[in-house]
Amino acid sequence: MLPKIWSLARLVLIDGLRRHALIGLILLAFGLEVGGLLFVDFIPRDIGRASADFILSVGWLTGFLFLLFHAVQTMAWDEERRTIHTILARPISRSQYVLGVFLGLAVLLLLLNAILAALGFGVLVSIKGSIKAVYFTHLSLPHYLLAWAGLFCIELMILAVILLFSGLVRGGFPVLLLTVSYYFICTGLPVVRDAFATRFGEAAGPLTTLLKGLTMVFPDFGRFDFKALVTRESAPAAIQHLTTDLLLLALYLTIALWLAAMVYQRRDLQ
Amino acid sequence: MIIFDNVWKRYAKELFRPAPPALQNVSFALERGHTLGLIGANGAGKSTSIRLLMDFIRPDQGTIRLFDRPAADLSLRNRVGYLPETASFPANLTVLDLIRFTGTTCGMTPQQQRERGEHLLNELGIWEARKKRLRTYSKGMQQRANFVLALLNDPVLLILDEPMSGLDPLGRGQIIDLIQRLKNQGKTILFCSHILGDVDRLVDRLLVLHKGQVLFNDQPGDLLAQFGVTNIEAAFLALIEQQSGECHVA
Image 1: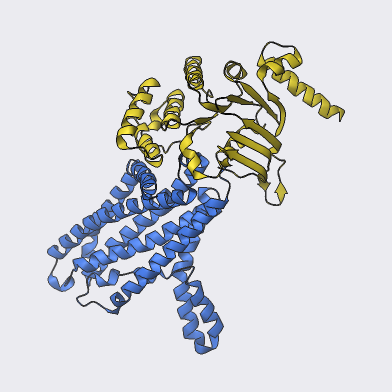
Image 2: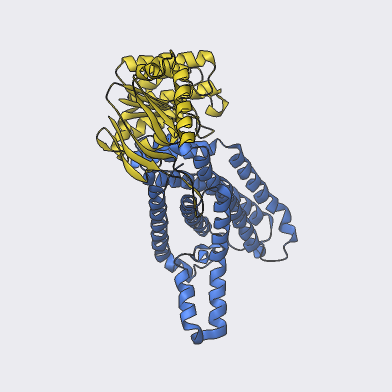
């Protein structure tokens, strides 16, 4: 089973690596990261934190663009151009197809993040070396890598959901709209939950429970946001929940991919 | 080898508005070593039948069996070579990438993949272009690349959807020769085409579909004798005309 999944993942990977649009995306992100050097002078204080935020935000934006304009399109093109028929004419099941495409796109995302993380770290070291220590006191490589790993985890969850949506609806544009909506609900839900808790307290019991329950479908991406740690000297409590978060991530990915495989298993591939 | 038994298929056209059936009560069988030509006008149900055989879509009613197993059985794919109507590859891959994928999924060793791939690429005349991206191939080259992939695992059964589609006379001649060679090797072949002259030369049995229904399922000679004509094209037109006349009378 694994050689079949990997052989499909390899196709997705090679196809992605040869796409000029992805190379352009990396160059754009690199340009933005390097461009950050030019704006250091405009930041009045806490330059370290602002720079790390900027580098990781560029990384997140690039990953999100990759998901919306490559991952979504890869799935849509497979069906519109009937590439999926060429693939499934071989002894490969629809579940293996879902897992193979997920793995291929996940490896592409990992490469994208690794390249941008390396370039970004170089930019941060340059900034740190070019200003007084008081403006950029600490730069932690392990926490920097953890912050990128957090971004990667969020991207993996969105990728799994894209595969599920691609099975449920036809065409790239509806999947793109659903994915953007899903992302906004995921990021907005914790804010709404906090607002309810603050305003109504204990009185809003069932509603608070409902909002908490919705987190199972629309996960709180904030749990994987470790940007603030990059320039901090002490490790805060957030890291203590890392194991739980990773287990939840694994569970979420498993359920989303299982559902996607079920949907593909049952539907017609016209 | 193939059994299609009372198969019905209807595509959902729009929400709450069902489309007319793409296939209605279609039954046919194909025996080992035979070549079956599936012919019909556009929308007759040829491609639907092939997609059902390949388990890309599922029937609403009826059963489809290949090698005495349900069409959905994954282990069958090792013995089937499929040629889609239009070449549909991921744009940036080479034929070598797809040979590796096909070989791995069919359980071939890297050495088998290399040897068989080289043999087929040479036989079909695309060895020189093996490292070029498939999007740069002409239509004829893409069709030949598709043939390489369909034949890589030396399948017993070949399912060919419009194998001559979009080819120039030279390319068509090469593909007809290839199908003839495969037939002589004892392969079981099912192919659909609307180029009836090609069908005439290759098939042992003929299945004529019209608006999702089987109009004829027998040897080509019987169809010619039924209408007293000398070529399949004339017989096919006469059959369709007869059917349309019956519909008008009804």
